[in-house]
Image (cartoon, rainbow over all chains, first blue to last red; front, side, top):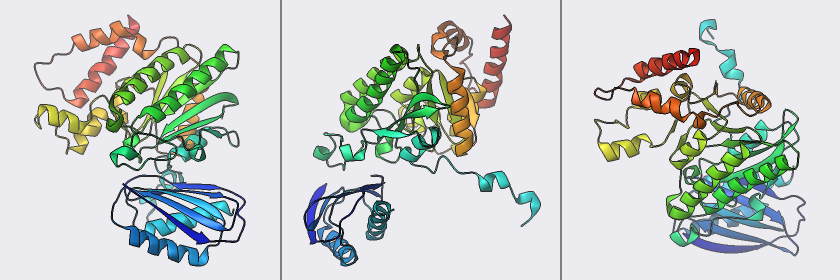
Length: 97
Length: 291
């Protein structure tokens, strides 16, 4: 298991927290919650080692569109980049409903 | 579309099996009454998995929901089969046991509260070994205490099924509800094959597995009390009906003599066929009832 942390500049207030997904094979869990400040903070725990660059690429792309001031925790059991992207977007959708 | 091939019930139903643990628990409670206790944002997760290189889940794969069933207070505890095979660890076990103990305390205070346990589990979580075993022992004690006051219903819908120590816990339930897709048994097919060889149990033979462990067989031999379709509304109705039925006059696990006699009466010199076995236990049941 590996753990990474990433930080991105953010400005938009988010009102609601959201929980999406399950730590099942090929899937992941996303916990998104509003925080104070002007940063988005992402903490990742993944069961598959050696993909730091891939995680960074997925999140860099995600934060080109998303600007919520949130803390995101990802518990991953081998989700592919596509699945990670979908779960993140699902969490955003649930937090903005 | 040909009329004979079109089954509107099948098309229009909302699958229960396709729901995750949180959605399942919510679906069983009266609309608008579900309230989650110790949810994902409380982050009460297993302290043992990360040090063994396994990613933990924020709710440890155990969802506890308080609410009402048929207007009456109830707690629903659902295991998430997709996380570590729904296995019981220290935290998930404690969440389940504590929920039942609180329900018990409510009953003692004069607030009738029943419990529904959704079992999609292979039993003890091997990474937490003895703690998982202890958790199941505690859970069984809690079921035995609560079932005196209010029904404890075990539902296994599939597709994981209910195996290992948790099958023993299900055996203590006031009522067991299954779908045809679900399986219930102490030892799973792979375990039996591994221990006793392929002649004893061919774990690749799915028809054989479901003929023995499957919901239809368990219901037909009196080891489950309701057999439901994989339909959320039908599952919820069965749970409501059994909840309102109350505590059964005699629990299955209290019928020690009945089951001892049945097992003693089995001729084990030849291999039993699941169909033959079914007719024997069903027949045995009606005969015993008329005595």
